[in-house]
Length: 336
Image (tube, rainbow, N blue to C red; front, side, top):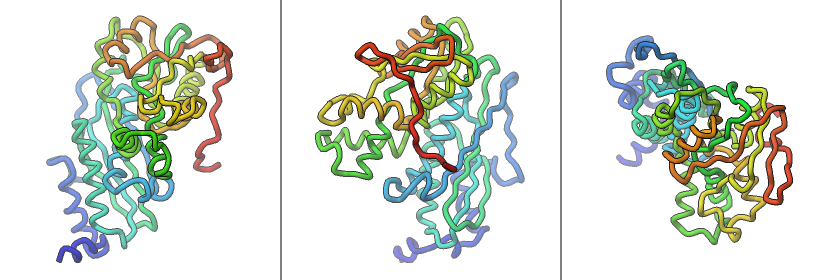
């Protein structure tokens, strides 16, 4: 009987039974009508963000379980809300599913999403289902923020310093371990597990928002998340704000486990920290005194890595004292 249960596909359930099965993962009392009704607090602005994931493009069963796909899908959207300074109100989830997909895979996928959303105090509030030749996930997250507390890419100013809320390169290292298990043999077993976890279950930095609200005086903060890479985030902020930046190579931190040159050569470490992607930290630009207050409250994982300058040059100051332009490497492009 257990094997029969595991062999069930969504075609065997049909649409109505499938919907009833998935309702248990949704917000109670919100799902069931033609739309979800949200009541933002008075004076707050709504923030809406959408992300899509496609099997074989964004995830693979070689590196990511169904539960981890769910977690990552939810985390990516919550990270976008955090990057705007917004607190989540709920997410809608639309799926394209092959009829031969195992019900067990779908259960685990929803379990991963629910685990992530519950961790950050929100829930699924609606969605849609469709037949598809490949698993396709589209999540829309809704959040709220006071207008003066929005984080925007376009408000960085010369004199601001650049703060990252944590180290970079862990998710890239985790992917390397999953795809090339022979890599990183000098790492401890615990470090390997931690790096894999950074790739499979990234943590959106919603925990930073209450600290930002406490900074004195209240101020405009420029920023975004680093899910597409630290270099990408800094370049996008600078372009949107019409400014340049100087980064200090010595201040760009890796997780402690990757600081051993026997694990990762220094030049490769710099590449992974700048271009590895999927670390889901926040990259923020704010005045020096407020930045120092933020770093102190966040702890040693956060640090100042550079400053905003006039003009349009974005450069990295090397350990040798020479500056090199920061450029986007030719990474993954959907339509390249």
